[in-house]
Length: 223
Length: 223
Image (cartoon, rainbow over all chains, first blue to last red; front, side):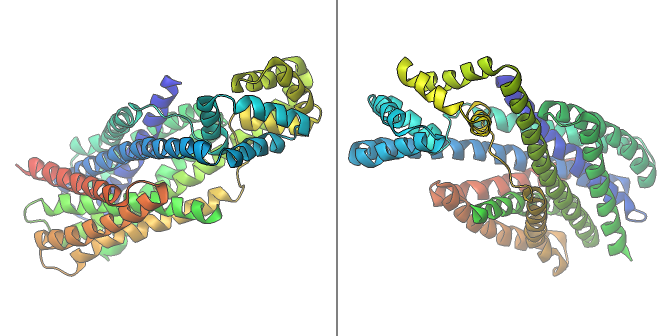
């Protein structure tokens, strides 16, 4: 469970990290006669911006989830105190939706509502669909996503440091990045239970489309 | 429910759309003596790349969810046929985890496993936590996210079309974008049940940090 959360973060960060800086650099190298240094500056600025936006975005999402859980938990305790009959009805509704008979419904409701903590926990999970979030999750998630974005983003950008013109950089970058996207897509698909080769191809095609589109946009503006 | 899904998509797309192109343009305007046209090119290329990466990323996520649901559904039907006793055990485990008595557990299990479709549906939802996804969702989601990214991205970029140098553009862009991020953060927080002003401030601070960092990175490279 812990491991799968870290993997999810890495997938989120690296997915965009490989794609967007790749496409941006590709777009810029489509601008005729561009100074290579500008590709580095724009690329690194994008990686900085993207990793912070995604990392802190992940942090915010985690914090929001935690705040939401806490405020709903407080509300459920209040409701169980204030309108226990209505809350009992809601528990009963859950068991009746499962399709249990009246008799079993009533017994289950009696047992579920005997202990207040258990009752509230039940309402949180099955009425509201909320699991207790890990309070450390937001911080860890922000770090993992941000770092993965940086690592992912340096892959497509690095070739531009070793070539003498943008188009050569683009060719090397495209070769390396599309390979990486394929491998990345393969493992991502394995994790999510999709056919690995089909999933890998999809991820690679998205990267290629984004880069092609950025390239076309840059060329069009120059006309 | 439908409306809330569209809003979620808009929040996802606009959140990054407002932040990343804003930060990238800010970073580039930090590069001394940069041609404004390069900010437009890089900014529009980023918007093209980002909207496709996020839009198609959303499409892929939706498709993956659908594939995953279908393959798990097939597997549950097979398991109910092949090892019904073990599947009955799992249903029982669910009711025992709720804390129901042995007697009620057994009755509930008997009723739940009488109809195979109901049984499988129950396993999907409460053992695996999977709801049946909307088959149209992936396509709609891709479109909403991509479009929101474009709309969001044009906000911070547009001032650069009307000024004569990058730093002036940055000042106008920062003023407009930070206001928009605040307003956007306010409504986003209302949706997610966070304190609106605190949430709005957080979203704005993330945008400012990302832009500041991109600016610093671009300046550092130039030294």
